[in-house]
Length: 152
Figure 1 (tube, one colour):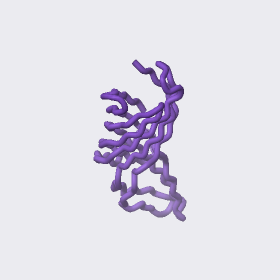
Figure 2: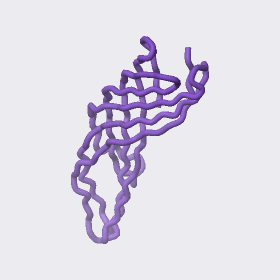
Figure 3: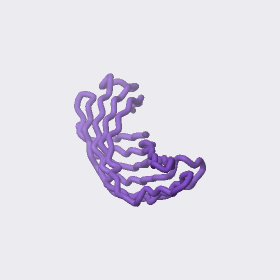
Figure 4: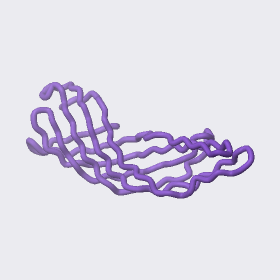
């Protein structure tokens, strides 16, 4: 994640965030010995309006998310489903030390992406074919990170 923050007037600021998160993998096994793994990720561009005090910042704002889901079992297979969603971001940061040019920041964000339709995905076992039907899943998630920053 990359974030840029501009202080408007104490204690208010505007920020913009860019990120790409590989959220995870879901593994499945069917009784006919079919295996399926589904990988999913989300990219984000967001802006927030924040209030700051003593090294703490709390902000919220709109975000544009690009969700991706693909079969992880076959390297190089193209993304099966890609959607753009409008959501929002709630951002909390704690900078230590609070008033120096160089600082470390603990970052916690809640990213409200919404539900996304994925699938169907098919896998052929030794005898039969198994199908994970089309379904809607929530891409909402929490993000926690630790980073370094520079104040000007």
